[in-house]
Image 1: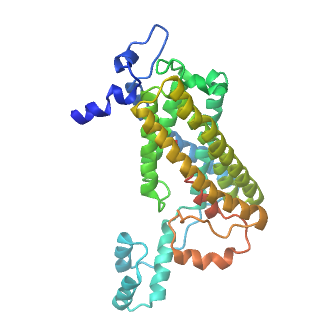
Image 2: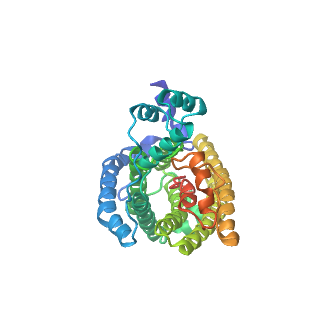
Image 3: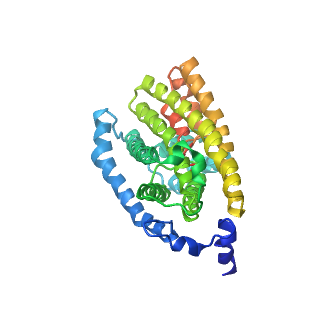
Length: 380
């Protein structure tokens, strides 16, 4: 109980002389955020997940077939109970395990390595499945961005960010703001749970923590009514994600020049939204304007610290993106992403395909490797 009292301490979350009770009794015609409002996101997250399954089946898959993206059946590994048992515990056995299996089965090590490579390929999703997942995310990001811009366009704090803090925290929450927050929260809740059935990636744990952090940030910013600044943050992050997913779709459809062009547009949009507008517009107002208008308090330090950490990540990510984009522009190809591979592949698989891909342009894998800048971006 003592820990819960600290978590919901009014002195932590609000400026001086503001209590939770003040937000529970708004004037007539005014709506203040309540933590209970966010419970609407839970059933909506289930609805979003079901909508996604329906969308992928009725819209994305026919589009994939129209673009001749087939769900090709991978080559099947030779049935072997011993190797299958090892595979379930470790998909890439080390040299010591390989030598032990070689003696046990009287197989050459190279043959066992080939079996594991084929077996891993069986579990990899088809290009069609990747296309359907990207098309769903592209549709959501585009739709939610258009909705956010249409609501923000008539909001005075879009043009004068200092108004994010006028009369804070006693600021009316419009229906548009509520819908936007609930939709984003439901989407990331659905992403967190669907991650267990989606394409398995090496950064599974990292993305799970990322989704949880995003959900917490959305929840806390809504609860203490930092919604005006929160909508600006989410809108800026969704903008570049649209072009990333579009580039991936073009890659899967083998429209290579379109893919390269969209990736360059994604790089530019990422730069302007996350390295220009985000620090010099959003972080500036949260850090300096709010200090001047309402003054700092405990949660203020926490939220600003998180925003500065996020901006540091943006700088690192953009450095990696820029290296890929420069190769796409000046060399006409991307030999390898500078970050670790997020697909379920091994170093052996990568090295075995290097020669085959040396004369091609931006690869589907290269575009997929940047998907986490969202994170699916998910850096809200």
